[in-house]
Image (cartoon, rainbow, N blue to C red):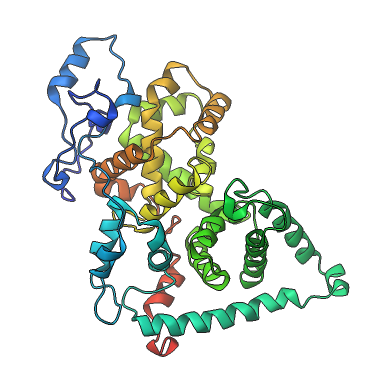
Length: 404
């Protein structure tokens, strides 16, 4: 599939099939999608469309026929088969593929997320991970004490600290309060959320704190249930997503630019419509990209989506294909109602809680496979959540003495 024809293709027609009018759940999905042509065009259906000038494809009912169905989540018993006698992950590629298609059971997330987020390396042993956890706990307390030790007199002369502290305290009391874990007055988990974010603002003083960070941290703290480990997992995530919060918003803009190129590649009519309506900045997808669809799905589905994205199995930028998949499913409505930017922004925001996650992941997978190297070429190097070059180099050059 990676060696598909690089000549220009009519990608917007690849989803057509004889199953168009079936409910999404009834659409046949090949058992082994790797054996299917990634850009198969159903000529009969296409010819029928050409004969009927009034035919409008209902993209809300379309399913990309080679997207694999979701599997049961990874459980503890199966997880143990991925580890050797000392706790190393034997085949990280196979593990990431398994999680990509099925996710992780709730009780296992704490252990597996630490690998997905980069807190632990896949080739680390149980003993090494225990030692690292003790070191990181001490390091966290050291950083935390930097702001804990600031006196009231110092705070009066520390404007940046006061501003960040006030913004964090304002945000955490509004973050996921409908979840029992964060519900109620004087909730210790809300306080922990605040402490981690304040500590991060001292750890990464240049970036500090921006609205949206509490949304990214909240599920991590919920899963980890441990303050130091949550902090370091958040640090690892922010190495990739930190550019989303730069003052110039360059990280988000680069992703929206890549999204526009992917839509042009995969759905040229929709791209042309956005161009006609002067919507090529794709700012209506800003929230999707900034906090990784956190507001679009409920808490549990958000965690399922994130662990799929963190596998980087098909692409580091699968979230952009998720964006394309959602837009394509609502293509006929967007164009049919002639939405301008303001109407489109309102429509996109109102999709929150009404997106079929499993179907969207299947569509995103198929779009990613179909785009192949042409899709990769649409995404500029260094576009988040790719690790910055200097971070990648640091990881590659890590000395064993740092762990042992």
